[in-house]
Length: 344
Image (cartoon, rainbow, N blue to C red; front, side, top):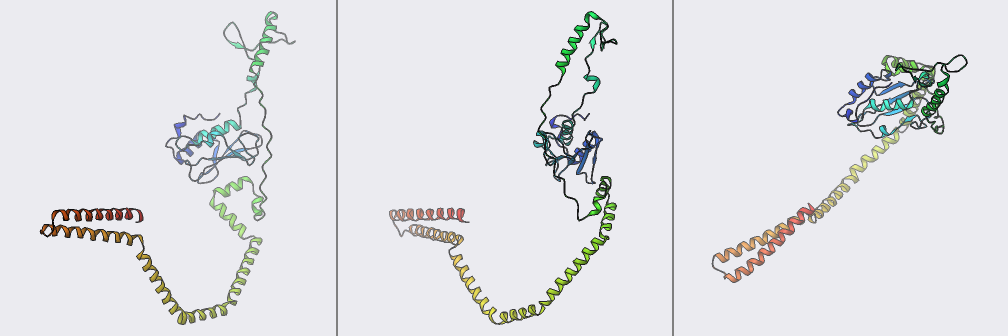
């Protein structure tokens, strides 16, 4: 039996460590395969020793876990590569879903609970004392009470037919996954058992001992010797180009002392000319010219007002010219503001 999980909102606020602790506490058969607790395995109650493997990505619980079986299994939830997917896992929500819930659902589906043999026998027949006991049959298969024996048999047969589960059509068999190729580069790993490989994954000292053993093997020594010889050949080839490199350096020095100076000066002059043209017709310069024009019109209208205040102009002439200048100023200022908001 597997632990009962709460409502979908039970996973709200649980981080990675809390969900891992809950999984290990509720499923004693679940054990980690590495030290950072990103890979777990739960044995399935099957004869072939299959297990459910749980992989937690680095961004868990924001990213959903990855479930897979270690051996081929014919089930609608299992694909050809051994991956396990089902609706609850595909609709993983970090704030609501829990690792324990999806693992328990996967285990319940992949290894269905089998009813014991005693429960699949004929149901008990109630007696007058209130207790239920199975009917007693004699040595020749007849009931002790001949009057009710045939009736009880008919009731039992009808009850069996009613309680008999409907046989579901099995899904079509899936082809077994393709096994990985043998490890040709590291033959030391092929001779190790699963327990030894697990020890190498968990303990650093065992991993270092294996690396030292592989590095000291004659095959690895030959590879290192070949690499050294290859590096020596590359160094000799590079040294063969030393005279050519020195000649090219002399040519570069001559070019810098004779042709580079005038070419660089001509290039800088053209770049400066280009920048001057760009500055003259740039958006910032256009906005600046519009502002200067509006300022000139504003100054002209102020001078007209001073002339009128000094009594050198009539009221009708002042109003006509002043209204025209203020209208021109406001149009240019509005154009400047629109250009500044659009171009700058």
